[in-house]
Length: 153
Image (cartoon, rainbow, N blue to C red):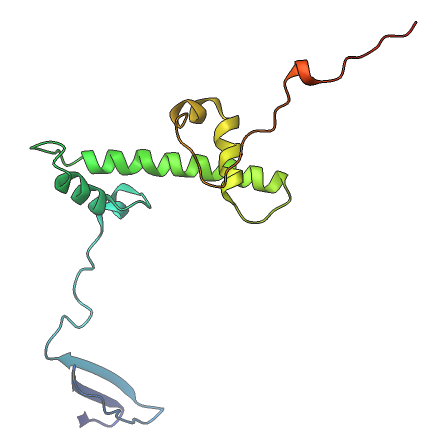
């Protein structure tokens, strides 16, 4: 630590934990040395952030490689698959959230997901053979079972 009249220079290593007190009126400059980048390093950007996605592109790529689906895989394949999965998830969650709000609930339960999927034509076609646990069925009464209307004149 060297001290001038109005300026203090602190030289600290990254392992130094002692605090140096200075005057409130003096200027302070801190110089760090030792191991580490000291805040100058570039933060790594994930491939999900580069693609603007929430779903993990790297993990999906790893699963595609480990799954032995093909001997070669393009760089855009996991990005595309992550984007499709994220879109499907957002679509189902939006419709299930609407179903929960219609039932005056604040949480999505499997029943709401079932109602959302079965009431949407495209999702019902995609997930037609899927059974959701604790989902139930759509409320439906066949027209033949309803009581007949009697017309009186």
